[in-house]
Image (cartoon, rainbow, N blue to C red; front, side, top):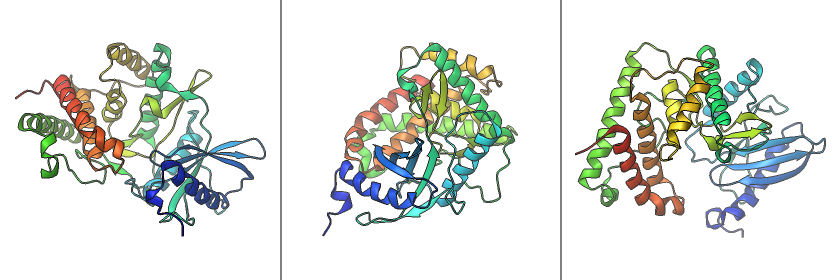
Length: 334
């Protein structure tokens, strides 16, 4: 009798997911030669090599990842539109022989069927290790181009993604101040988190009252989700698409630079690149900082419920760092 899937190591789980992926790949017009694991930290991501020398990326979605079939179909719809309407090197979705962009597959030893998608290959290496001024300017320009396309994008009637018009846009419970986590939130820290949430709610209210329509955002556009290849930037991992406003997307990008000593230089380079294609969207000083702080608060809430034991072990330190970040960005004090 096979071992319980959840008792396996990540590598053991990945071996079973690979079998599931092979079942999914039978629905595509591909002559598969080799399927290799890239990562199984969240979704199962595999490289697919074909006999004609082409490469593709196979994603096997985590069933508890907070996204449903409609969300994935919508992601594929925008990626297809971007690949058709622009010259941006996004991962283009590959349809099955039946014309579907998402396929459900199952395999022995995996406790549930999983949704699978195939994309064109993303070449290069991570932008995170190549944060030169030139690359960061290109990153800003790329961000603006995505926002410009989204401004005029006409989705289908079945388009369904998350909405960033609430403090916690992901479909997960808010556990930050539950009694079970009270030791991590002494009164002063809780008050600082609450101040951050109050500031963010006020910023959201101003956005909703501004009259600017929401548009599709990448939702997770940071330097680990961009590759650099021969001087060109390749964005990927569009899974967290959501309706929102450009300042929120930019805040997500900047969140991962917030603690760096060179943040001012990175921001300047990113902004120069952005305004070369579109107006800088921040309406008043501190607006983006507010959403950077909200990103940290949202991740703090996520880490409390993620079953990964490494994340659970890191939670107290992460929450303490988030408190410091809120104070630094918003001047919160009690």
